[in-house]
View (cartoon, rainbow, N blue to C red):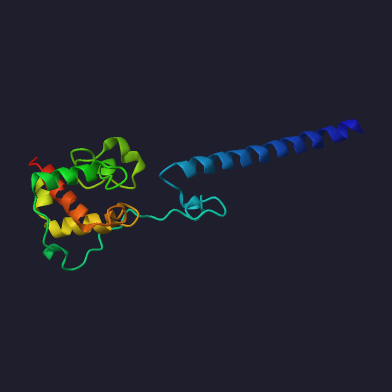
Length: 177
C-alpha cells in the first residue's frame, strides 16, 4: 500500500512546486514592470498606487495660463543696477524666488536638480527665447507659474515690485548662443 501512495504524493509535491514557481515568477515580473518605464498591455490597467494614496497627477503637459493682455503689461520698474541687484538677490533666495533651484545660476538650468523636477525648466539664458517675450509676459509667468511645474512667485513674493526686479535681473541672463 505504501508504494501505491508514493507516486501520487510525488506528483502532488511536483504540482505544488510548479504552482509556487509560477506565482513567484508572476510577482517578480509585476514588480519589475512597476519599476520600468514601459508596461505591457497586461499590466496597463493595473494601478501601482498604494491603497489609500492619491494617484500622482500628470503635470507634464501643463502650460501657462496668462491673461490675454499679459504681453501688453508694461514694466513700471526701471532696469537700474539697483533693481537688477535686488532681482538677483530674489532669484537666488530660497525663501523668496528660489529660481536658481530649477533655472540654475546662469538661467540655463540647474542640472543637479533635473532628476527631482517633473520636466526640464525653460532656458532663460537663451537670448532668442527671451527676446520673443515682453517684460509683461515674463512678469506674469513668474507671478502665476505653472501648476505642478513652476511655483507661483506671487506666493513668496507678494509685492509686485519684487517680481519686476526679478524680470529685470532675468533679462541680464539672456545671452546669444
